[in-house]
Length: 187
Image 1 (spheres, rainbow, N blue to C red):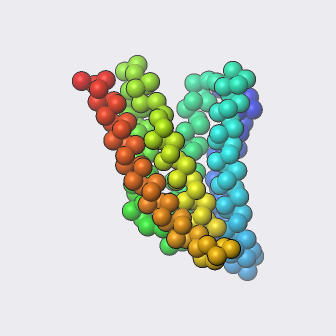
Image 2: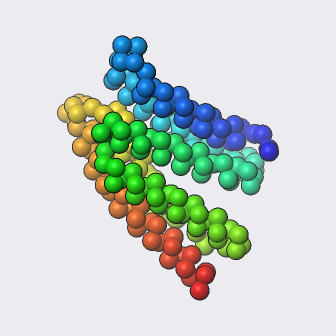
């Protein structure tokens, strides 16, 4: 397993997941719930930024590796799945949104693995629709983690759920896009 800064950043994202999760299980008399919300949003935002940054560094410094290509999406999907499950548990978003997003991630990950075994991974490479989905999803999760219904006159819970709805539509759309691209190769 290669060790470099991009892979270190990816491992840091994975190691932040239990810290992120534990925040929501601390007794309320230990830490104010709104401090928990802000801390969780900060950790999630840091993970999102390092996701972009580690890929940028790996390409720029020519430190890409098969292991990094495997680990990076695992870290992303774990963080998003954990955040979605926590948000459903906290009753800040609908379970349906979480099921759509997590279900799509499992489906497309399996599809990419299958296409990779066939030597056709490029047919399901990340497309613009996938990037739009990720952007809407990350913004939604951040709004919902902060969880304020009055943030400078904005209801972040409503905004987060509108963005979650948009992310869910883009999630379904991108899943069908990737399935269509793979179907061309399979036929």
